[in-house]
Length: 191
Image (cartoon, rainbow, N blue to C red; front, side, top):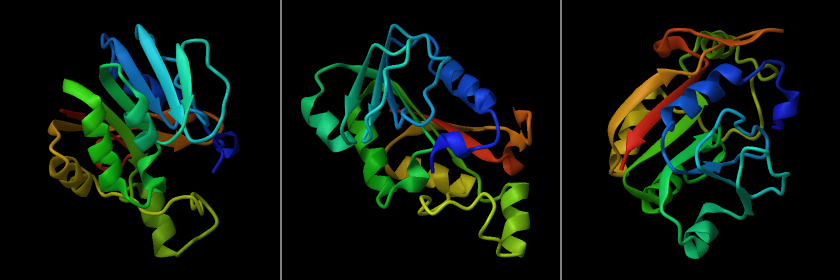
């Protein structure tokens, strides 16, 4: 799904994710093309995506390849990885998380965001089995929050914290909302 099709502003989620990597030197933003994080102000921001895209003003470089190819050619120490709204599109999310672990320096941060299958929106749409709204063909699976923690632990991440990515209000954007029922979950974990 192209981010341009989304009817709400992602600023709330993007600001929260940028805040979680504040002060880190080198950040890798995986899947940046559809929704670059304009709030990242780290010393070095690298955009990684399998699609070609323009280089946002606050990014130092962009790389067009998958994470496995990036691992082979990268020689920089990565202090933080952001993967916003990526993991739900992957056939092998555990492999992806393990690859992120390989790239990060010891003590580095992984911040991911992903739709919450327990959000009010998802619960209502599941009751009716609605396949029109908030239902993209690109999403392969959704991750309940406690299972997201389990996946991160299986991949050796620790100090895992979950945050609310907000709740969408049409024509306004994402607003603060309690974590258990938020629309998008943000997970912070440490290598």
